[in-house]
Image (cartoon, rainbow, N blue to C red; front, side, top):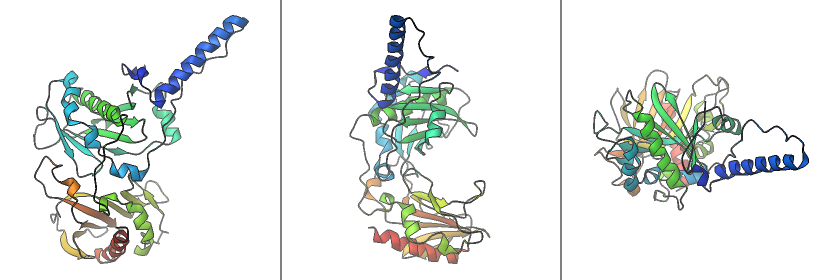
Length: 347
């Protein structure tokens, strides 16, 4: 499959383009040398390996404002090539994500058309596969774009030159190529703006739940071992998200679901539907639900002023800690106390 290259990408000063330019110069030098000596040049490599940018730290990622990367003043302009539209964006229930609303496209104008969220930075092996010449990828100003289909919906991912990756998914999929075209246009905008420092950040209040490494706090609180998950032996906690706001127990068998997970994010109020019960945990309002195997807790924390006016709807968003464990809720709540006390220490 032929490679797609974004017009103007070769003019970028990013490290990805510099690597390819150096390779091209070296190849030209080899040809000239062969002409002078009368010998055949060494076989050219079958492909150029794009140098992988260094991954951004989780602490830096927690403060990034991806909605500001999708600059409101440039969003509609970026989508002109794929249809004259007006678009707005707002923060999603994922504090590291952004919702994009395109009223003309949506079946329900109250629902976003696309969601942009963080995705894991690839390993060296994954990077080699992502940037292989036989893979469909698009070199753009500020990064590399890869598109595909996940669960029947068009999706695309941009691996930016600054070491953070974002995925976009169509929440109201269409049957045409309009999703792919608009997704690529939005992610081009993300990569281009991210390459122009300073990076926009969300001014989270100092000590706010969303500023914290949840996995580090859970380890310090002795989770999940303190829950008694020792048969089989409790696995270590592993970070599930690039911003370290989510982690889970690592099972020996990768196919097994983790027995313990904890994360921080935004809840649309404390939902008591589905037979969930109200509770108070370490002085915080909460809801809990036991299904006979797993307890699910949602624990409310004080809201952050940085979230004011960042939603397009009128929902009551609550900063919350989420915990699930294969234990009765009475046991899980005790360990939630330990975690909350550890988080409070960091304030």
